[in-house]
Image 1 (cartoon, rainbow, N blue to C red):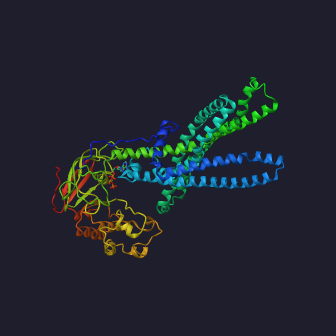
Image 2 (cartoon, rainbow, N blue to C red):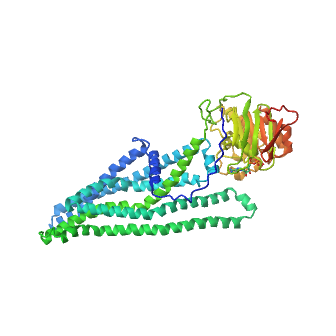
Image 3 (spheres, protein in one colour):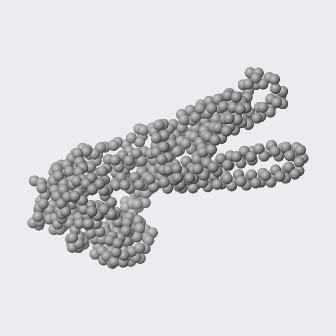
Length: 619
Ligand SMILES: Nc1ncnc2c1ncn2[C@@H]1O[C@H](COP(=O)(O)OP(=O)(O)OP(=O)(O)O)[C@@H](O)[C@H]1O
């Protein structure tokens, strides 16, 4: 039995602005979680690309060193007027330069490949959680703490992968160059060189971490406002016609500009905060240049090198400076990455937070049938689950309310939805008619009581036609067979005849001409070109095609005439469906046997219509 109830819906207050996202332990946890997704195994594509990048960048470093010492060799052969040496050196230089530039391009190429591969893996993993069960509904409608989940999946994931791939080639080689030059530095300056440089790096990192803290949280906020701004434009795009009827250009202009201003304000503050980080980074860069001379100055002024001649001393200074500068340069490159790291941290928090919330929702929602242990899959699960075969739902002492409200919409409702007993649910606006469907469909949790679902979703089971017709993108056939991915049953050309016949029965056969055929790709937005009535008729064509045993129709004929309504209801009944309708029209009564009236104030009553058999269990 699918029993759910007794858990009051929790109201989660948006905490986005109270939480300061920083470079903290939470960041490390979230980042490691994302890395686990990006590198699922040692033999995964990303891991192999990463290994190849390591080999390429290390080879590149060796070649860079060879290219770096070329000028000193040129000095040698030119000073000695060694013509043959000069010729072979030129040839060697040409070869080295070609290899170097090829390796550099290869490095870039692998980074780009890695970016695409990471984006694919990360986005697909987010999709897997988002589209599992009804997570996409809960995260968009019921959980306020996650702003713009769409933006996090489509844009933030992309930017995170981009930034990480740009960091990769610089980071990957750092441990090797740092180890190599630390050894050389120790060899030529003793412990004072490496210790001073490491100390300098620690101070630099600490200073940068302090400067980066506010940037990470501001970046997080900026991305939220970026999403809000884009959403506003999307809202206008989707509702352009309604807005135009209101002549709402001015007010929408003002509102959209308001969102833009909020976004720009935060962007400005981000730029200001970044100024301090840039000052820190640049100061660190230039101070690093002097540090090598300070390191060598200490033994000189303390008299360690007093016995060296000025010539030997300058050779020593030049050699030490070279190694120290290389080592400092290695650290400086790491510090330079801090601006990229602050971006990475911002995106990591946004994606990490979304992953956590989706995991949480998945754990909370038991979207599987405990009896059979199977999850509900609209496409493939046509098995009827445990319970009387001629019932769809058994509702017992059910109370429910909207997620953020205190008052119950309905209290202690008991009824059985059985085959052949057509049920009409009526009631004033806002009394909880659609909410009843939400609770039956497990989009909302019941406050108390039980709902036992004894059929499956989809063909042969239960189908819900929502109040707002939902049209997907794609061809006319895809609209009709929605939400199935393939035709059902798989019967080839016979399917075409059925679809055409059902389009005719639903009164939208003209769509065939407009689209040019069932499988013609259309470049229009279905919402823009169909009238509300046509959308409702197309939803009925869908219903006829899927032929569920039970059809829940939420004001499904509100945009149609009573004659059209009569014809559609007649067809549904001829196809053997049991109808559960929600609506206000009295004309609906004649197609139903039982009426459930939601009276407001949590009250309800069940009455018999037209002498139909009353099968409720309530008083
Ligand atoms: N996602 C939501 N979050 C919070 N409250 C909601 C949500 N959806 C609906 N409500 C509220 O729940 C109450 C019941 O809504 P419901 O959609 O069930 O009304 P209804 O009886 O179907 O109304 P109508 O006849 O207009 O369709 C309303 O007060 C509505 O504002």
